[in-house]
Length: 259
Image 1 (cartoon, rainbow, N blue to C red):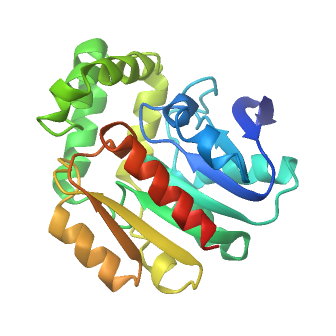
Image 2: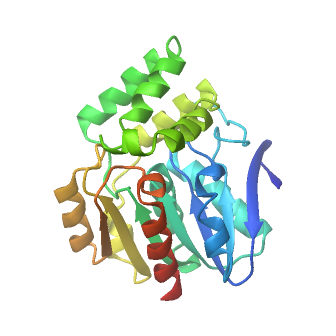
């Protein structure tokens, strides 16, 4: 289904009945990343997936997709569907977007899950890397995507989940260059949103990959402790929906069941 937002088309899906769950994909991903999880969650819940601006079947809006702008698209879809309160589950960039939504609309959140994500802002090194990537991507799109994508997985996973990686990579390669640049810019300037978890009493869950090459394991554990969030640790990398598919599905079902 498609919703118009500021003259841009936003693609979303809506399945099942019950408690509303919003699944928010990560950078260079789209709604297809949830294809194994939606059938399970939608048995007892209403599950909404949304293609963020510049990803999947959704349009771009300029060259800066801030987390606030991304969250406005979530808000627009939920308003269109007349959903007042929901559980937000965000992978990586999707977690940043969920936090931006919760900061503005805490009363509309029943629970929030950061999946391989963080409340922290980028450090200076990461900000520099994003700027450099945005310059390089214009001449080396395919190679850049392939390289950065492979680095999201644990070393063992690259062999074990070779076929799944290939499918996910093909989806990533469909991302327009404008969407890539706008997304990187938005992540680069995002603020620290630790306070969103600290100051709200909705249910919180942080899912961590022990070998996540993007997020430091010990730092993530400390973050969960400091924000009074439930924590689940998987043994692999940044892509829990591929590397720990069955375990992740069970964890999310249990998290939703408690709300």
